[in-house]
Image (cartoon, rainbow, N blue to C red; front, side, top):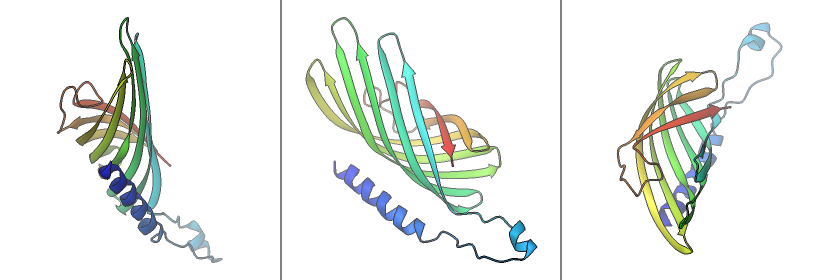
Length: 179
């Protein structure tokens, strides 16, 4: 729980600090100035997950904020909320997953996105009316194909532990949408 509070505190401070560095566009009548585009350093992104099986369902939402340090290097933070539900003949399982993610992106080319992100999640699982809760840290290294405002790729969890992670394997596909 302390990690979650620290994560939200960090996100709040990051939003406050980053909002102060937005460039201010100046009004001018010159054609040269009108042709220049103003690029803000602060942007938003998000991810989502959705899965169905014959016995269950999974969905998550990951809204975030990103700051462009240089054209090829970006830092970001996002919140994570997810839900899983699985039912078999004798077992009924429901999980709520929440936490945060700190992200670093490197864009060596316009279409390639390399990422490193630290994710700290809390899982609260109820199986047949018995509830348990645990923390799931993850450190991902990823690669994605980026086209326009969408990146689609795979990432690998270096801290993966079978049975503790929210995913069945260390490799995870992802989609990020930037706006």
